[in-house]
Length: 598
Image 1 (cartoon, helix red, strand yellow):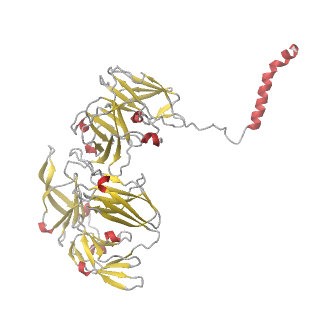
Image 2 (cartoon, helix red, strand yellow; image 1 turned 120 degrees about the vertical axis):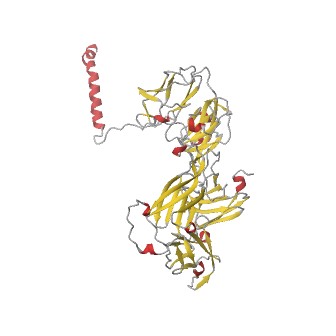
Image 3 (cartoon, one colour; image 1 turned 120 degrees about the horizontal axis):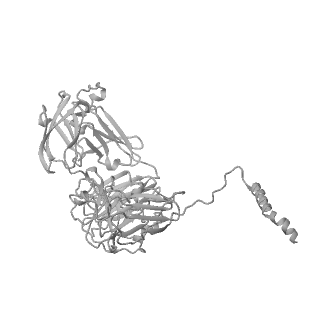
């Protein structure tokens, strides 16, 4: 037996290897590459910080922070490694094996608590799994500050959560501080628009949020960045406890976790209108039509004239914001290639004050160079241009819509004909009323005096030479016919508004909330009817029209004015109502309660 072992035992390993090779070849799929196993879906794990999290007395010069992970990682977005208080120069990052080194390009402040938030800046090297975030805390002093402030940032008009917004705390209570210096503490909002500014001192602050396009950690009003602010001075009331939901870093897909966080402040972001006033644009649209635009709204004009044109020959119209002015010359004489317009208005001077100034504006023919040739005259250039339309779904609310290209100086609305045609094709003339638009002198709405009936056709006829515009041209005859929708699959939503004490704008929007389908302005309790709705999802937006101009106005930081408040109605905790086919729905809304007036 010993002889057998000594002779054959050394060959046993060789035999095992040969057998394994035989079986592996017989089982291999030579037409496909070997499988790589299950896809890695586990995000990186932070295993070590150096110095340790919560370290005090960190040197203000030459500090290096090292973060070691359980696998190789890469920096996806370096700017999302966010230091608070922020510095002027960006942090320097470098990968060293499985460790990330963070260095400071300028000295730290003495006796200051700092937080370094990773947000979604780190991902693993292979599958791109994002590190869920982590906030590292250290101090250049002997203690770690322990208070925190939380909140949510939303768009003022859509109420959508805004990600990547810089939220900032200032000890300086003046509103100009946010435009002149970096904050005392700051944080970035996450996918939910949520922020937590943690490890701050227990003192008073001003709270702002800025869409920091140039990453300077300040508000650049001249660049027209978005901003939000809290009206009053705030003081933190929450203490940092790592186990609290507000202080934890959640996966953004963890809806339950993210919604469990308390939001102390709601900030509405808006784009402020410029405050510096001057003329910024001029266009000669045609021989007798021009417009000029101003940098800031609410333009104040003391006087205006065109050289060689009598003052009573000018027709002007501001837009609702009063930052664009249309100008027409009501004179049939041939206009020169260059109109010299003089505008005496309140212009911002070198000291930032509004002072009267007369400015000369040269308006060149065709809106181009003074040397540009006039275009050939076409038929459309010799008639009073207009557009007449009626939309079946909205004709009851908006009427027949008539808009002229130029202001009219002679009109004959009495010569219009409105005709109803019943299902038996019997025609009847009906009375109507004409309403001129309050914001556009060229636009009119024409309504039948009687209730419109389903199954009837309604025709509006404009006679030949019924209108003459400022060019001296007469209109051609035209007509339009409309019929109310008849599909039995269409539905109606009745919005019953109660306790309406102010002026509100009520809008029906599509599901994406990017298109206004119907709009009402209400000043008292009433029922708004939205008929002829197709099956689908809709949203209802109500805005508090504080200044009564029919617009949802933006805010102003320097005037300390918030944007006009907007609320989307909730239907079973959702911001849309799902309307089925062939239904008549009633929805009651107490407006005072909705806006917190009770």
